[in-house]
Length: 414
Image 1: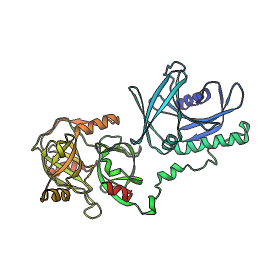
Image 2 (image 1 turned 120 degrees about the vertical axis):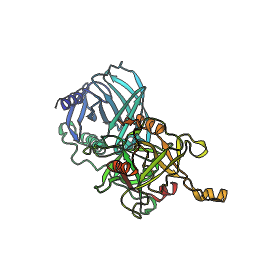
Image 3 (image 1 turned 45 degrees about the vertical axis):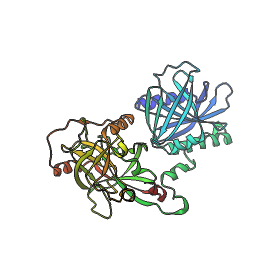
Image 4 (image 1 turned 60 degrees about the vertical axis):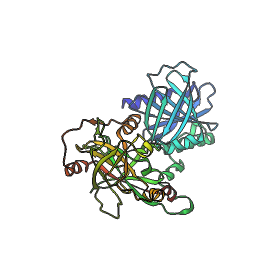
């Protein structure tokens, strides 16, 4: 209750375009967002519509849309102490993919305000996560109900300009359904061709339901990305961050889901010749619906052309294993399975078909990725050797089938 009161206080005080604002008139109430219309104190004329949402970090997001059609995004906190007129560059990343640089100004000591270009507004309203970086400060914002709040603010400006502040009401009523909502529900691929089912593997690395997989598993997905533990109902996963260069992606299960069991990352380097176990869902829908287990060794501590980001392994993997955990003999994660050597191309080049040459992303790259995504993963020292059957039993509660529909163009790139 106190937090809501704090947000209301900010709505009454702040203006996203400067000081001297009065309001709110009418209401915007969508999810955690609350706000309304504001007037200029000096003239009494309509100024803008704004809505705020609080975060556990103590930062409050303020989204505004003014009477001349300018969108703004502000970061407010009672703890901020800016000099008026102070400026800062804020880099924002949406769902680990689309990035933009915003240039913010402190019109008030407790808030930085930046103009949002229309392309950033469109991304903001359909994204699930925004990471904002300013200097050394990094903040994560779970973007809930951003599509409806953008629609409500648009409706607010339109209604007030047409009817005046004295007729301000509930601006969430009659607001147009945002186009971004339809996009989230999966627009059909270009050319009208149906999307094709795609699957891979992922594994849980935190009690909060953070799930690691490959970037190429979720790249080009249309609509919902789903995760299934063996024998359990599917859950819709959201993208937290993604790194195409290192082929890593981070997904998260719904906030109502918690995981008692999760993978732990080996805290010591693995060696050539060490035993490894790969677990995943190869050829899902053709082979078994349960995961598959294969064994092998670390053949080399580098990948193609001495790429030190990867391990070369002899454990057999197939399409669908991508994104799955690679374990050492003690059951600790030592890599993320990413693919196999392109056998046909090698055969054409050399005249020989390569066998048992597959690759996994090393834990150094994985840990850097998780650190940058601010994930509370756990590491562990190698313990006594386990039977392969025990490693598989332990992995069952957190190894997940990842599936989605993807465009043919995206599949062609894999």
